[in-house]
Length: 385
Image 1 (spheres, rainbow, N blue to C red):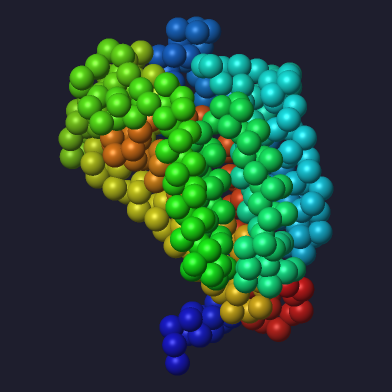
Image 2 (cartoon, rainbow, N blue to C red):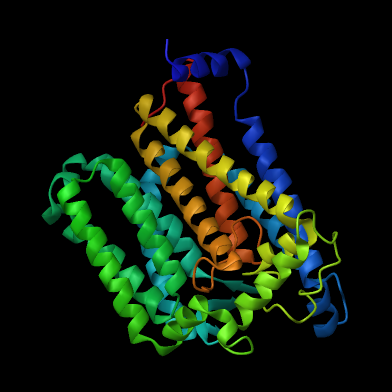
């Protein structure tokens, strides 16, 4: 008897309706993110408004609102998500177009729609839309994977969204979505001869985009040798590396980071991992990397289990979420430790931001829902795939 069948029997016998270990991991990581957002933002918060808890209060409110959204979302079946996918995809395209017209510019990028006290970031919503669209496409039309001509229409629709993302501009999110698409195509069994051509075309396009934008070339040059211009294009990376180096093995202690005190830009968003490294050391960074690795493996495992149970749409969605979580966390951590050029990407489930935490918690809710439906089908209930 193979390992998967043994695990399936253990799940059925356990009587648990959902993966409790996955739920606890999400709770602990979300709680830790609130702690670190407070620690990383305390200096900025005190300087801006005089209230050192302002960023913590805002993020706690974002998390609370996200939980209130996720509770009813958890009641929707995956079949429901498959049915509403076209409407959600169109909504995301409309919002991406709207952000180019009425969007709010922050740090030279127009990525947010200002709605009262909230800044909505449609790009985060489009990442989920891409996952749902490809999952629905592969489920309904398995033959679409066998010839590149049948991918023309889907490619055009995705290209429209990606094109509007590049107009913001948001090269980091563009790369993340492209990796999600390539990863889902690979797991879906896209023919190798087309897959290699597609990867080559994407790599060439990425290179052209980098060379066409002087600021991206400057970031790339700063990545190659950040110490050549430590007060200019290498400023963020050098201070991130200094924060991590100062943390050594066990860190300087919670709240004792020096770099977060106006030295390290975006300490509570893009570079929160560097603050974690400074305050909790190499050991703390390893624990956090393990948590992300565990989540990715769990997502892919749930996807494989759904495929074995013939819940094909659920399988693709779980795999897409796993790829998304893995690649975005890898990119953010890679930037913080200096193995990748700087990009405006947050660390999933950890960085400050309302849209990011809302969409990611919805994704985790979908993952728990898929696991729930897997368990129900293993117990003999009828689940439509």
